[in-house]
Image (cartoon, rainbow over all chains, first blue to last red; front, side, top):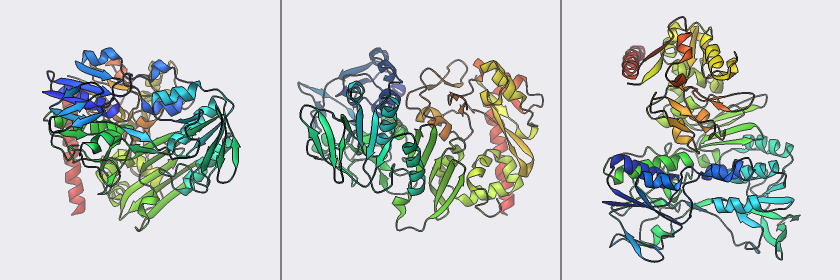
Length: 422
Length: 159
């Protein structure tokens, strides 16, 4: 039996570990376009490009770790195609036969066709090589295009490194739109601005200007002089290989999988950023593109491919961001997802701390918190189990239930005075 | 068989001896901020509840750590944090329902219980039996029994 895994990110590696745990004997081959052993993509926009982390600290495994687990590696080799009929992965020269295939090709950055986007000094930020290019580039002023998660993190990291930073893009006023509603978003925007990062929302880049290196970015409102521009406009599932081979792609652009993380082709599984997975809260698929979801999906895909039945419980968005010491967390969905739904919002502000809970039909569907990361865990448990807030309320308001579920009390700061009896 | 710390909240008086002992063992000073264990006070029922890592069978903290800094100590069975690998992203703090991983306020470093390598200091200094270091199977049995009692109680309440 030969298992082939395409991709050496967290999903691929977690699948490999699961297969190896299920069976010590089977052959496992990992194919990866990048030449490196597994590294943590999460640290790149944080402590790596800020210079707080050395390059060797980015890696999660060494080459010898793969051989210790008896995993054959074909790194630095791109999978060119899939021959599903003959169960083969086609490489530049030759091919690899498989019995079971796991596609963990990850995601790729969105690069719009802006004039001059190919010029020197314009970078994306996804891979270690991208991060190296940014970390090694010299200059004074950087324009970060895209005030999402990676954009905000990269702005902070480069500011710490001494760059003058302008964070540009997004709808008027808002940053971190995919994870924070307007109010917390504006609180966080102010923190960023107070630390000397210029935030220009409601405009977008239309041209990069420069000869050998760029020297400015032109937006639809102004020209901003800069030495470097970073394009962080989001990630999309990397599905080219799967799509060309006839594996079905879903409505969101991710590979379609069932609860066992199997694609529409028998024996081919997919996991991580390249799939669209069932939402843990709702019934529709979501693109989650987050570390913990990829890890869990890889595990489920690995076990199922090795014949051990596991169900994927669904993806849950959990993101945390440290903005100059102010820690903000978002769980589940934001209001944007519930435009046509009756949504109840519980919110509170206490000094620098702010939080809000989003509730639909008595079920917690989202929560955002600024400045208080400590007691969120029990709320996540409530969300994972799909419990009603009424149940939480009942526990908190009845002495004997509370004394047998004392941990539940950690939820209290978020709902005190907001629900009857509490 | 691995042992874990079993919490009996009804016996806790909130003296915080556990936290001070923990802090002294792990940081060399007596400071609640340095402790890997804390207690919460629930005024409604007049109860103190020790909060510490449960060394879960399937730890959520281990799943969310993006740098593999959290692992299981094969010898003690404890879920341990390697401070050299930790980047301080706090995802473990966010996801844990029990308040296991904690933020050290001064440095913002993450600290968590490692069962003191198999001989937990907090248990030795709990004078009231609120913390016991017991066989994991036995703890599971005690917890299951408590869970069953809780269920019975809840059913009674719901009528």
